Image (cartoon, rainbow, N blue to C red; front, side):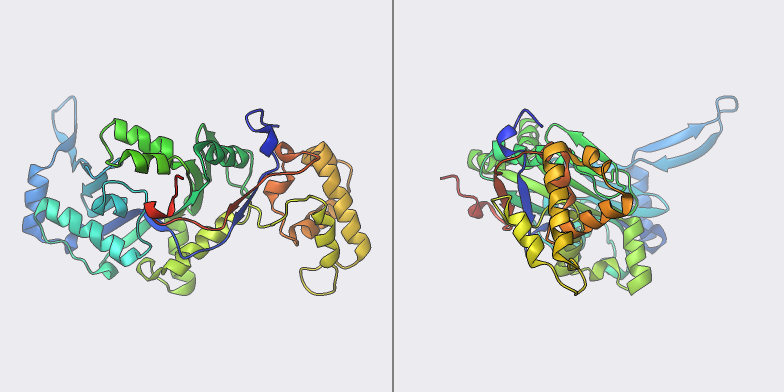
Amino acid sequence: MNPLWPDYANLFLVVYMQQVGMIDWLTLWLDASLLDRKSMHRVLKNADRVQRINGLTGEIQWESAVREHIRSDDHNVTVNFGSRLQIQGSPARVVSAHNVFGSLDIQECAKQMILFVAKHHSMIIPSDLKMWSCSRIDVTQNFDMGSLAQAQQAVDYLKPLKCGRQKTSTFDTSVIWGRGSTLHKGKAYLKGPQLRELVTKNNARVSDEELAKADRLLRLEYSMCRGLIRRIRESTGKNWYDFTPDFLLFHHSDYFSKFISTIEVVDMCNILERLLNNVGSDEGQIPTEGRARAAYRCYTDIRSRGLHITKQDYRKATWYDHLKHLRSIGLADADLQPSNVVPLRRRQIFLDQPVSSWDQINLA
């Protein structure tokens, strides 16, 4: 049990899909042959360059323009000119002094970033998104947890959880799943401490009141990477610029729902009632009352002794049947973790209402 929050060790997080969120990162690229040659030559002529020189002959073996960082908040918008033009960064940082809130309109976000770079370099860059490719899209939702301490408890709760085969990386105020994946990855973190650090470094501009509000925010960030974007295009014909807010939030919700509970109970004895109510012959139901009660006994064993110890007492097929029945009533892997083993009541934190502006966060 985590000593930092023993009273909340069996906390549940409830995530609902809402029409609230933002695109927090885009990586876009365009074939350089589609750019105006004169403008391209002018930009490259003035750009810093990296060379590899043969130490014996002094011959330049290759030369490349370095990536340029256009400061636009805590993370720079990065531009790289070469065989292709690559732009990456946060659309929200382009139009605001911070990236706490933003838009889910992927076409508008992409065009804002392209226009930002075009103005910076005083050059014409094609804005037809069909000419561009995209290799990363971050979709983020903010949740008002009520306080920094409560937001930290939620992050601590998530740290021991696994998301399929993806590796979990934990830090003081964040947890990352699938780091380095070419398909997708997830991240939960505290916005307040991050924003305060940026303000200290003069990389963000917010008021004291906004800083206090940011301290209450827990962020769930889902990254769609090049492999998934390509797979979607090949299987459905849907290109990245056709991804609607609904589509992006569906993938966000689908990813996090795999290990964040959707159950809405306060008294743990409600588990048995839910299991019995799910007895039936339809798909996703439990075949008999006996199996429902057996699944409940397995659940209480897990809560009292831990997942791995309890697993040793069951045959493999029986064990996975019990887990299937428990998941059929909304329990997620988060509810079966050893760190959540407590015999009494739990405290529940709802993540059912993501916030989209400072005005929705009430400090009173």
